[in-house]
Image 1 (tube, rainbow, N blue to C red):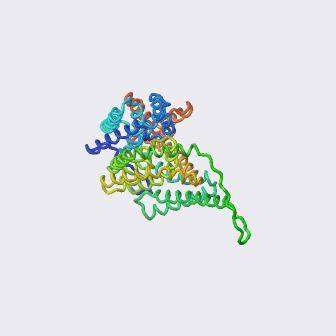
Image 2: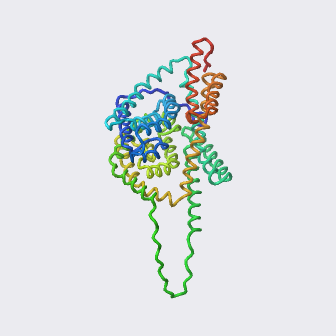
Image 3: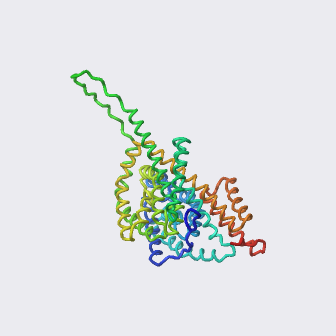
Length: 458
């Protein structure tokens, strides 16, 4: 079916070959190990706390509690439901738990064992849960594929929100119009490809262009005027005052050096991640999970490539401030591995990419400091991605509720979402919708067995 009409995910079967399963186990073991070494974690919220942990000011138990508190909702509310509904693994399901297990492990040798055990549980245990769920009278996993269309077609508009937030409603409206025109043209000319890829590219380029032009204007305005010396007059040199040392710059330099000392670990990590992604059993985001499930690897590469610009400054600054990197680097490993012709090329490319990223980290930090509007644009992009996905996943969750339970399904899913909001949001909004669909699916099956509910036909 062409994208112009709707998007239907591929069959959501979590059946992996032995080679794929062993790769997942090995990657989980490795990520738990580097987490235990405080070299990298996936959760961006955990990374700022790692500096005190590295220095010994925070105990392992306290750090584990922080990591678990910031991660559990994403694992069970977003990671597991997305994997079950798409048949594709994701970083929330694999790497948030290995963050926790790696930090928790009191001995270094124990960390890879715990991480590998989690990987084995995912690849072998999740398949059984998937098959059992599909045999239920109310198949809520198939219904969850309704989430895909809102995610794909609303996610493409995140540059619009970012531009409107940073540069005003007029620029936002223009970007919206440009993106919609591109989507319409893409649907007409290339009906079998995802139309959002070109629209996102245009939106991100417009945002970066606006931000760069603003930085250049401000730098020209701030440049001091040349002194009007008399012709032939000798210019008297003025000694510059010594600038006091910047403590932040000193800390950033030390942390960048710490990461460079462990460069071989990052090269291995980049290679392992790239191999797993290239096996097409893993995707880097919500939208790309559905694209990979359908086999649209070119479109998935474009989506994750544009998304990376929203997280690059956050990852760079937190890495320089904490001395710990992101498990998936700047996330450019995803598009590289999607497009690599085989696992060997992907592994070599991933190793080289992570090596370059770590070596360039300090220079990237300096560049971001010199371009504040570009840095702000990235913050707006990241915020826009979150807002867009919150709305898209909520819409999709309501659509899934209607498919599996009609009005009662909508009441259950919508009610659980509203209840979560009213009691202080113990489950983050991104995960609240899919989690509500799973809970509602279980409830509807119980009602069916009690002869109180008849499944919706079709």
